[in-house]
Image (cartoon, rainbow, N blue to C red; front, top):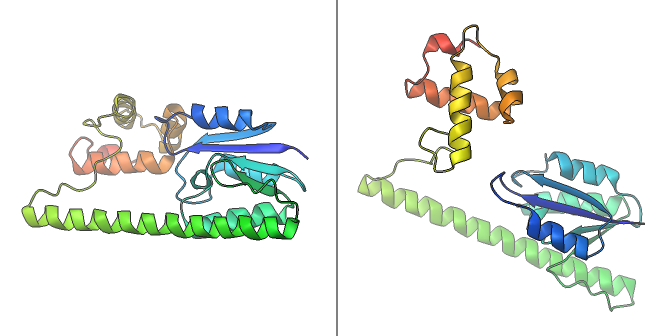
Length: 213
């Protein structure tokens, strides 16, 4: 039986230091960490962690939203942890460690988890509603410009602006470099390379001839 930690931030620009420090302080012996969106469960380190854990292991996370963003995803992950015979410890939620009755402890823990999942889902729903209202008002005023592109020549993030420029250079080479090769070189997903290429063609940065790879 060991303590297994999982830490996550949504992008490469964020750091994991606070989570890692809290997990190590809690006695975590095996650590899985990644910088990836929590929009679904298709995350390499999450899946490695779920495959690694064994019966009576303790999975430790700083907060429940590090495991997932949606109620359905959280339920699936928590069910998988339980199916493996492990327990979940969320550091910023009550642990009920002082309760001796295991059935009462499990009942209270499940109740807290369900309340948290419902609250998180409601907050995301409200955020989406506010975003849609803001977009509608902006369109009515004629100032809506659409979602800011993550990787572009105008990106506010210097690293992402640099990566965009490198991708464009490689897309312009003759003979062309494949999308898979570009993705490996710059460390981005192929879907992101395709997205950059699509917008570059639409903006006239790339020609259709340079779209053959």
